[in-house]
Image (cartoon, rainbow, N blue to C red; front, side):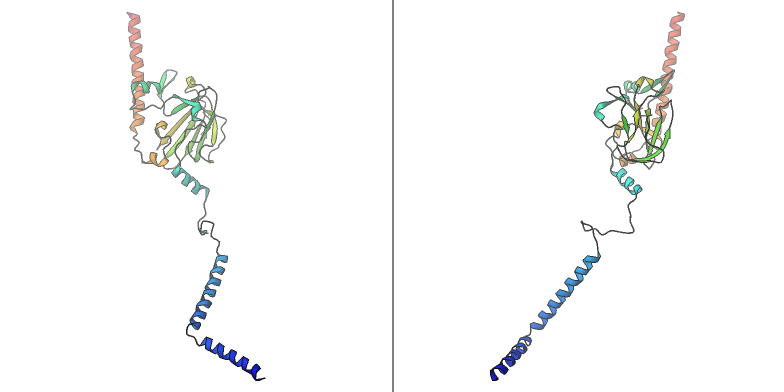
Length: 263
């Protein structure tokens, strides 16, 4: 019995000696704190649901279609209004008041007995066949007009006074108010009374504050580039002056022909 009683007493003495050590209580406190911190972090991670990239969702901010269009328009560049650029060519170029006389003559549209400077570019397929006409840039369909003279018209609005226009089109697939994305098919190339000589073609314009600019100068350039560009209304006046000069030249030629007949 003495040996059995001696064993428990020796264990008690060992335990007392163990807890008398100075480092034991700080070690216990640190271990307990680590366990509690681990439990707290685990519980917090279960309640939060960040996405895979670590960004937390913001319930007060939701993306809308208008936001998406606004972002896209800021990074998009103007594109040719066709699916295959290599399959088309410019039949009638844009009339530029600063161009050479030969280039200006090529940009004049002869309609009956009148001459009109081209305010866009007339695009034809190299095969002479019809082709899909697509949105040069994302935007909103502002208007769709049935017009036999111009060959029907689609106007897209891109904000800040910038528009693209698509004329001489058929089989139109959009309506006013539609939101369209860049490259979306709007219609097919058709014909117009204004430029019958071009045959099956699509007339394309880019306008800023209703002033037409040369589309070839803005293809592969951003909307911001055109927004910052200084467009002078004298470009339109220059077109009118060119029209008047052409008419005066025709009148002079007629007078000379009459004089030759009389002589």
